[in-house]
Image 1 (cartoon, rainbow, N blue to C red):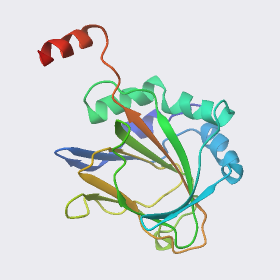
Image 2 (cartoon, rainbow, N blue to C red; image 1 turned 60 degrees about the horizontal axis):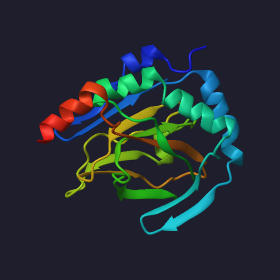
Image 3 (cartoon, rainbow, N blue to C red; image 1 turned 90 degrees about the vertical axis):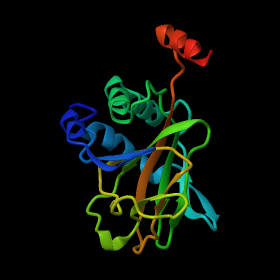
Length: 210
């Protein structure tokens, strides 16, 4: 069984396609084997509470050398996935994924509008693991512009096996609305940097800089 569903990526749809910012959505993105690995690990990841005015949520990181982290790197760093990112967002190759973080939301938990444009991040991904989710439960992803916090797309429900990808840019923000049910609501976030230029690309980059 494929780890990524090519036909789903072929049917990816734009959420935002504006100057300086792009966001897209892929439903039924991954195969059952990969999803089963993630779901099996979710309850016992060792979450810690993050509680500040700008967020209230539980977070956990897959341990270095664990089967879960190897699986994440293999699938989200696969040639097909990286090629999709390059085709969708442009701007050359991206590096392998990093900054994997699982988030667990309970009732009242939220993320205020913020940007992940740190550590050289260029593209941000969010994958959801919530079966039978209803919009009335809250926990919706909102994409807004920075200065006005104006919505750039309709709020996105965190449906099972739904993947959202968007550009990391300080001028654009994202948020999660407060959870209205007991939950839990699970998601995985991960990031990509611009890959270093190499070969002829590096030569061209140096020539352009002169």
